[in-house]
Amino acid sequence: MIFLKLGGSLITDKTRDNTPRPEVIARLAQELAGALSRSPMPVLLGHGSGSFGHAAARRYGTRAGLRDAASWRGFAAVSVAAARLNRIVADALHEAGVAVFSVLPSASARCHDGALRYLDTRPLRAALRNGIAPLVMGDVALDDARGMTIVSTEEVFAYLVNDFAGDPDLRVTRVLLAGETEGVYAGGDPARVIPRITPATWEAVRAGVGGSRGADVTGGMASKVQDMLRLVSDHPGLTACIFSGLIEGNVARALAGESVGTLIARNGESA
Image (tube, rainbow, N blue to C red; front, side):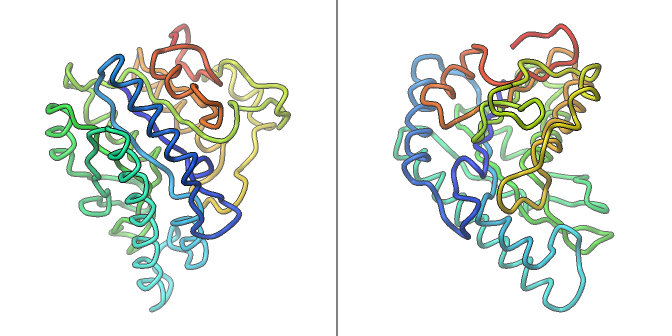
């Protein structure tokens, strides 16, 4: 079982509000369709909100929760923006031949003080058992402490990895995060991609790992690495990979288990 995220920085121009990259989205959809036709496998897909949800969320402070009467209008605006991008991605996948099923986390997510506590996984399980690829995303969510918040795609993935762990048919072995960068850069230098990060090596490199270009209310690269380290530490045999989706063929290579970008592992695990 593989989880694949198409990052917001990859599928949108994060420096310009509500600006998708249709050519990139179409190519990624074709690449994914080709990989699945050559080697069918259960895949759950996700995407970031990029310049859609993040721009609106930053404007209204949605991640931090309820502040004033305008906060609920902001909650609705972020929801609409995120769903708009989800429709663009789902349409491209469908047109490429991927059997895709959009599942918006906001329909069932419940959070406590910013942490995702509940998500109805029954539609996802049914889709996967019938050969359909669910498509989730970063989304708004109700929060019993803050009133409202935002859950990132990585947080949704983490919840699902934990929820699926007891099911041998759905146990997740790889989490693939396709973005703009070729991996995690050492000292912020694009010429120095860190090939492997483990919990034991993270402290030595984390100071040089930066944030995000453009709007990102859920944290940048350092936050993604920490989320993945926590996940691989909790689930022996699980690995994560951060790589560039701008390089043609990388999505197919990652799905096939080839080495691309930065591998995040508990210790000796391989891709």
